[in-house]
Length: 135
Image 1 (cartoon, helix red, strand yellow):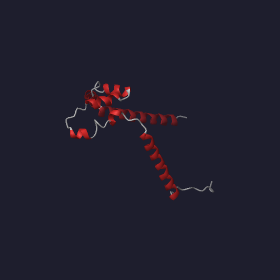
Image 2 (cartoon, helix red, strand yellow):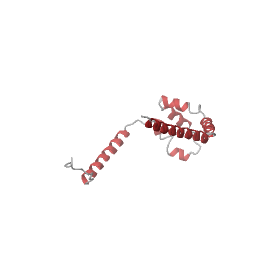
Image 3 (tube, rainbow, N blue to C red):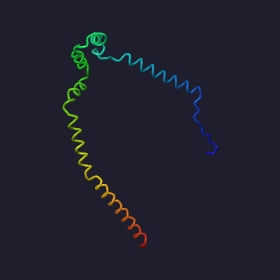
Image 4 (spheres, rainbow, N blue to C red):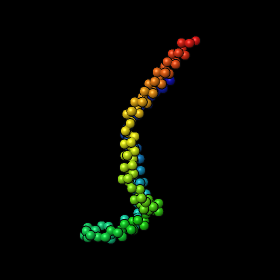
């Protein structure tokens, strides 16, 4: 084992060039495949998006949202429909109230737990000493 030679990581020019080529290949593959993914038609509609919105500040965007909603997958639509059924504020208030209730006697519970652990540790040490002395 003394004869084994430890190899160190040398990042020479060859390694740097290989990493750059690998990164370039990954980047080109991602850009190539992302070009052929189907985008929702509502988001690519130049009559709704683009210059006309800038010229008309009070434009009705409901058709755009309806089109975007229709282009969503069914499970995403269901999640979007159920978003208001669980009020976040009430849920958060319930959690905060639970935490407040738990924190009322938290220091006392921690001190009692610490006392129990100390007593148990002392008891185990005493039992080891008693068992060790009696042959």
